Length: 524
Image (cartoon, rainbow, N blue to C red; front, side, top):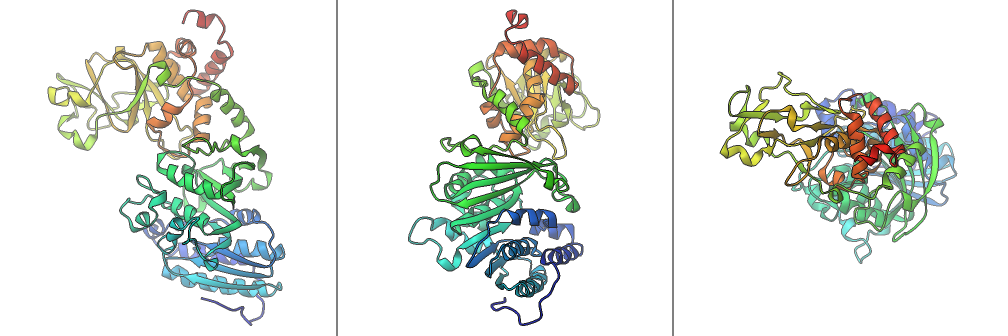
């Protein structure tokens, strides 16, 4: 909306503080529903300044893109950082779909123009009140071809805190970005992919997002295209789910990614830093790793690993050394076959003849199945010919929650289900559970207890968190997880019977792994 620098006297107000005040005031006036629909979770000033610090000093004309500008805090943080590093001519393109907020943003950016002018820099800006994804998704189809974005649509810097919510595949935004869409995409991935496509060679991208893009089927197509364009240089991992957006009461595992446009790159180094939250950013732990240790370019999955600390890296190396998987042990994992809304006719609030236990998510706790709870309406399911196809034989299993609550400390929650605990022929497992089993037979009790203990350990939970940014625990991820040898699992099962304290489980895991050649394994 502004094409020329203002002739007004320079405004000495810090543009970052100004944008934060304006954005916060606006957010306090709108409903929670409005904020959720627009992804209006404002970046805290300290995080904005930290993100801007990744941007390299640049001379000459600098083009900056903020694809979801909100109150302008990332735009102004980038402008301030670039001006203070010596940039003299800057042009900002900012997108904001909320028209009322865009009017506030226009005032913020006009003030930033005056601030820059007072420091001898020329800032112009173009504020676009339209959907960034719809307006720019064609850049994904033009990659490397005749229809690549023109110079007036490419940028030296893209900085963003994009909205995050899932899109229906039929949504116009998902349809516009089909090359990076699989299943039910999360909108923030579209912002990242298009932002990368709009970078000039050597341009820099700085995004704060959830970690879920780093792994999983839904983001595989995205990772292939995204990491074909940009080379990661820095990643910052927040240890706390609450702290990065605490004032908006957002629970999310956040990561800041700084990457450089470098088509076809194949090697390099990446710096990983970690802080518990915002207050300890200045004391963050930092280490530099070969990129191949973080992102395996030869793998079809292209999982981006994010171990939070050097100790986590050591734990991951221990797990990676295991050569077994579920399949090599002759075991399988499946999703609970009882889909609640489709099986209403078979569910029962009371037990009695012809019913068997129906296990739900809240029955599964670390190392124990708590059933019945007498809080749920339907903790039983009818065992009839018509329902047999959604029941499983009463055998020994390891049952896992498919979903973990965002506030939970552990991602993996597993319990041994022992057939001897229920005098029934069949059992019902609801669809929010996964279960590990031996096809055509049963795990031994030692195997079920030992495997559940390993899955509940800090060792495997750390490995899983570093390789998977989702709160969902998918069967595919468990299939791919390295497993210790069966004798080791059985040895742990003998020791962990009846143990539910996770600190004790960790001690037993460490003890068993330290004595894998000892007498415990001779009787396996």
